[in-house]
Length: 225
Ligand code: NI
Ligand code: MN
Image 1: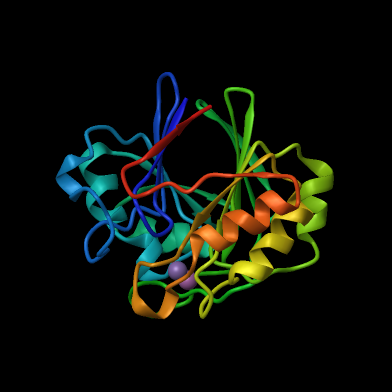
Image 2 (image 1 turned 90 degrees about the vertical axis):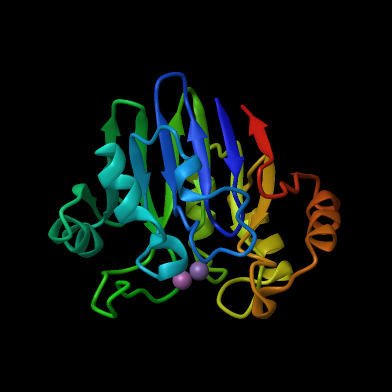
């Protein structure tokens, strides 16, 4: 399996048979390395929450590929009313999809739809796929229940926001990595805009000082699992 980082919180996960997009923010994303027409396959889209920098190009891509949108109940209802195929989940609930299992975790943040309406609670994502466990924290502060995620999962790779202002900054994200116990940590949600400029190298030094691996992915770069 490979996971390509496209900047901000947008990941493209390719398993053997499926392509899964997480938070596909392409249009208006100044650090994204692709345009929406470059996506050639999309079977599922998983959304952490409704904010525009995460919902992104979901309408276009879900319609073009007839992809299923996975999101918390209220956001799934919103997407469904826009004509998209959806699967609703809620916090703490998982479901076995053809590509693997998705479980939503808590995230401490806010949420609204791109029209400003109620979008339910924000979430993080646990993705169990091809024997690996991937955690995408979504937009969140540090919170102590991340310990529970670590205690109940052997997380192979954790994608954690480090941009500060809207989410955790570097030091809180280092603490989050400690709580989650992930083997490898990859910073996301930084340097997209001036407000979330962050020092990813400092983050990696601090992650390595607690005995974990850190990998910086530039937009367009990938990891193989
Ligand atoms: Ni947000
Ligand atoms: Mn965000």
